[in-house]
Amino acid sequence: MKVYHISETLRLGDDMNPDFQNLRELALPFVQALEKSEDCYYSMILNGKYLRAVLGKFNFWEWSDYCKWAVEGAFEFIRKTEFPHCCSRLKCNYFYDDLENSMALYQFDWGGESPEIQEKIHLLEIELEDDAPQKFDMNIFDEAYNAMCENSDSETVLNCARRYFSGESTSSPVLEIMSDKPAKATKDLTNLLKK
Image (cartoon, rainbow, N blue to C red):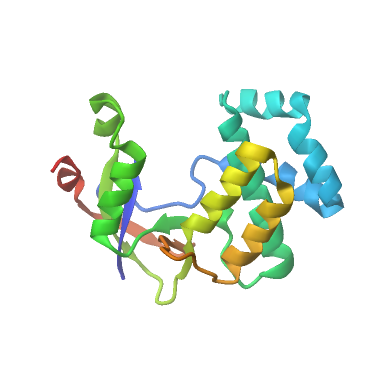
């Protein structure tokens, strides 16, 4: 099936590998904390020592980076314990099935960046060997991320994870396709981003 992917590192002809940067390691301690208890997870979020250790190890320095992986850990815990039939966000690649939507998402994420940063981003057409990939609403993940960043609200994050993996959609869903099946970059469409 033909899908689209936006990337800083992927190039035409490349095979896609889930978690090629081994960043899932950032989420696993949060999964382990939730396996103990929600209180343990919440305490870990607020633990400044752990925050600095994780961010420093991966050369991240922003609270937003820490929030991202705390949310990913919560989503993975909910997926493992309540939705084991769903694809793991930590062990998959992400795609969009609509070219116009891909270009709009590029503008949202990178449209205001400098030309030097924009030059690094590529839009690629992908051949995905998956007849039934899973689709989930990115807006629900973003809601969880905002709840964590703004209020360290772990209860909302866990509830968002349940909504996300149950297939719930917001009023204006932005569907991301998740698949751990083989995928290859077959066409570079980056020139479309410059229009």
